[in-house]
Image (cartoon, rainbow, N blue to C red):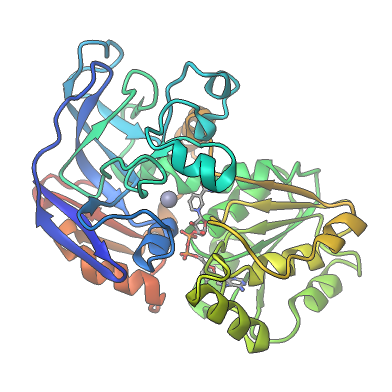
Length: 396
Ligand code: NAD
Ligand code: ZN
C-alpha cells in the first residue's frame, strides 16, 4: 500500500510499504478514505518529538471503511464507515473507565519511555513516535486499528467524510480546550493561535457561552478566519503588547480564560524569541514557550489557562510566580477524543457545529511531502489540508 513515511527532519516521502495485518483479535483493518495533517505532525516534521525512526508511517487523523475485523470485534462489520480517535485506548483500565481515554494505562507498549521522561505513561497514539507506542499511522491506504471494539465510532448515515474527519482530533481538542475553561455565560476567552485547533476552540467557546472571543496570531489570513468564521475580535501579536491590548479589551481585568493553541513551536519576536530558538536547537530547552508565558501573564486573577498545544519536555523562564500570585488554574493534555465524539456528532447532525470551514486544501495522498512543507510555512490560505488515498472514491 501507499503511505506517508517519516525519514527525518523535513523529510517525509510517499512510499510503498507492506499492508497492515490483524495482529490481535481486537484489531480491525480500516481502508482510509480521508486523512489530514495536524499541527502536531509538524512537531514530528520539525524533528522535535524524540524517538521517531526512519520508516515510521505518519498520521493520526483519519476516517475510513472497515475491511477486516479480528475475532473479538463484534461491534463493527466489514463495510462500516468509522471515525477513529487519535488516542488508542483499552476501555478497561482505571483511566478509561473515568473517560480519561488519552491517559490509558494499557495501550502504550513502550510505556517505559514516558515513565522515564514524565513519571508515567499516556495512551498510545497513531503515527506519533515510539514514545507514544510506535503505532503505524493513518496517512496511508490502510491502517491497523487496535482495540477496534472500543475506540472507533460508526459514521451516522448521511454525514460525509469531511463533516466528521475532525472528530478524530482537532474538533474534540478545541472542544476540550473550551470545556477546560469552565466558561460562565458572557465570559471572555482569548485564544493564542488561529490554526485549526485555535479556530475550533473559538467556535466551541462561543457554543459553551463565551460572550467575547479573542483570536491571537500574526498571519492575516488566519486572523481573518477567526474574525469571519468564529466571530472573534483579533490581535496581531506583532503589533504591540498582547497583554496590554487584552487588558484594554477587557476593562483592565484580563480574559477570564486563555487557551494555548500554539504549543511547543511558538514564534516569538525579539530577544525572547532568539533565546528560546537557540536553547531549543541546542536541546537545552525542549519547547519554545513564548505564547504560554504570555497567556499566564495576561490571564485575569483566578482565571484558567487551558493548554491543548503540545509540549514535549522542559521549558525555561516559566512565570510560576504569576501562576501562584494570580491563583490561576492550569489544564493541559492530549484530548480524550472518545468521550467527546458522541456529543459533537449530535451537534454536527443538528447543524450547530460545522468544522468543514477550516479545510483549505483537498489533495491526493501522493502530494503529502509538498503539503507538509506548505502547512509548515503557513503559506497564504493554508489552514488545514485533507488528503485522499484514492482519488476515485472521494466524495465530499
Ligand atoms: P497550526 O500550526 O496550524 O497552528 C498554530 C498557530 O499558532 C499558527 O497559526 C501560528 O502562527 C500561531 N502562533 C505561533 N506562535 C504564536 C504566538 N507566539 N502567539 C500566537 N499565535 C502563535 O497547528 P494546529 O493544528 O492548530 O495545532 C495547534 C497546537 O495544538 C499544536 O501544538 C498541536 O500539536 C496541538 N494539538 C494538540 C492536541 C491535543 O490533543 N492536545 C490535538 C491536536 C493538536
Ligand atoms: Zn492532531
